[in-house]
Image 1 (tube, rainbow, N blue to C red):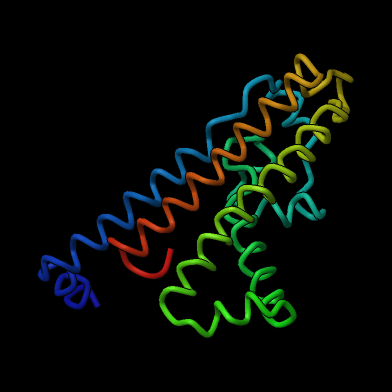
Image 2: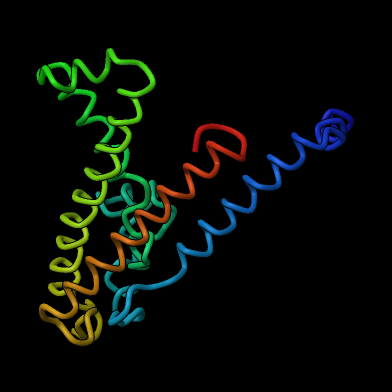
Length: 184
């Protein structure tokens, strides 16, 4: 088994792709630790303590713990996946999208562009919901609000931060497609 692993690293191109992919994964894990501004992390931790067996815990598992820590990667790649699924389903009922699906490479590029735009829209809508949700959360022990300065400023900052994080994750996935192993 060890010999097989050693043989993988003897091939320059494969070694480069593996190291690139591991580097991207390290960047993703690092970004999953950066909190959005204006959050009391202690109150947030108290609220989410014991949430592993809830819907929050399930979603948090998909985004690597970034949701319960309210990080810039709180949505993960889920908006991109949702946008892809929505556009594929819409392709079955909207003639213009059906036509693009049949156009080959040019149509695929256009659909990819629409998927990116849809991802930004979904991420903005979802991050707005996250902002509103966070404003309503209080620590069960102390009653302290999770958001230090609630209001439209916090909501806008949350939308910008989390949407930018989602777009960055989408870009990281595309980099893995082009230079790493797998398909993002």
